Image (cartoon, rainbow, N blue to C red; front, side, top):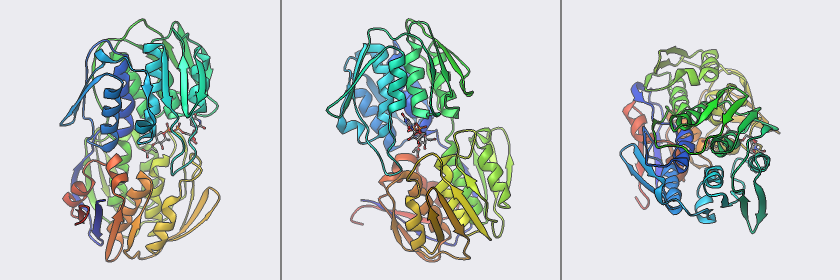
Length: 419
Ligand code: EPZ
């Protein structure tokens, strides 16, 4: 497998452009299954998870072409109701096809995704809500089987806000008979992006971005085009890279309005953040100050930025307390960061990080996307060489990570397998 090798100590400076959002693109591409003609999506990031989604759409019978940053999905041949284990195990987000397959074909058979490195990640809330729309749901032989000739709108309150659950329900309810109200819905920008894509296809969805979403079901949805929003987590990762290295980085094509909690915390570390409509300039302090973080559903501080902020805390002055409230096992980066010299003590869902004035490079690896990103960030400031293995995880979620960081002055290169 490829690895990434970084020689730390370079200050990052210059301009980088944000890519399209992985987590917005995944449900939006899947939503094409609901259309009656080809849908075109631009600004789609060239990532392993997007290729997996294209493969899944093709397996279901749709035509999907990915060229440049454009994906065209033609659901004309979509007739297969089954998403098999082999495809779902590659990418948990495959569960997002459950709602559209059921809504369109009246039955679906989708492999249960199982847990992943960051937690058990059940889908009980997706299933409970689909059952409220009238679906007969069964779990057998590792698969969810759902059937219902036509879903019926219902008033549904989620026990906790779930991003994937809200997305699955938006897609299912868009073609249901009557009105569906989702309460305690997730409010992430990716939910708004999906609702916008569905509305462009003729759906009637209001309230996306708030905790209460109303969906007036329609008989059919038409083909439409959509441009994928900027990736707020990729942007946040470059913000931390700038802050960590005492750098001066402008990020273009981004959405500062999606990053308010991250910007607030970064400013508390002494980092200067200037924002415009679609750009940000981030200037790091000579030594950042420690800051306490508690992850929360949007608009709170994102769990997907927790690992990256832990690296900042690891080299900051003073101590930081970092609490992870979304996933039960999202501290997998801690033991690897300790190998680089970070002083981190974990107790339950809380990590106490005592800032050090130096980290030292070493070979590391992680089993999750954002954990791997945090190791790259640590490598940028560690003395000597850091070698990040299992680059596979980074390729799932960061478009041209090493190219973008090298463009900002980092000493970083990818060494192909066997190289
Ligand atoms: C999405 O995952 C993102 N993935 C994750 O990004 C992100 O970390 C997460 O939302 C939280 O922001 C995609 O968008 C593809 P949830 P999702 O359902 O939808 C519990 C990354 O690094 N829960 O909002 O799976 C769940 O266990 C990834 O890009 C249930 O209990 O997250 C968690 O504790 C990783 N039952 C909480 O809810 C359910 O049925 C929030 O999960 C569903 C969720």
